[in-house]
Picture (cartoon, rainbow, N blue to C red):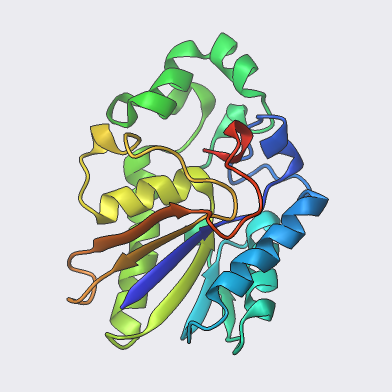
Length: 218
C-alpha cells in the first residue's frame, strides 16, 4: 500500500508568515489553484482507491482540485483527525510576533518537539496530534487492500509530525528532515498493513514551475 501525502495550496497567511492552525484559515492564493492542478496532473495516472482530506477549507479545496485532475477521480472523504495542529493563541499571529511574545514555546514548537509545552498558548501537543492522526492512518491501512494507493491532503506541521512518526523517528528529531512545501507530495509504503513504513519520496515539488521559497515551507 502506498500513501501519498499532499500539503494544501499556499494561502495569504502562508505568504505573510502567519500561523493558521486548526482554528485559523485564510484564502488560497490565486496562483495556488494552478499549482494544485499541477499536483493533479503529476498524480493523474495513479489509480487511487480513495482521497481523504482535512475538512479545513484550504485542504479540502486542494483535495477537490487535485481529484478533478485525476484521470479517474474517486470518492473524497473529510476527516477532522487530519486537521492541522491546534495552536491556540498562535493562530493568526505572525511568526515574529509569536516568537517575541512566547519565545520558549515558539522555539520548542519549531526546534524541540520533545520539549514543546502548548499550555501557554492553549494548543495541542505533538503526542496528542500524532495519536489522532495515526488513528486515521491505522483505519486506512485496515480497511483497504494491501496494494491500494491512497491520497491524503492535510497540513504542513501536522503532516511533518505524522509522517516522521510513522517512520519511527524519535520525537526530538521530528523536525530534522526539514519542512514540507505547499502542494508538495510525500510518499510512504507499507507492506504489513501499517505496522511499518518506508519513505519513497519526501517533499517532492519537481512538478511546480518555481523553486521552493522560504514562505512555502512549514
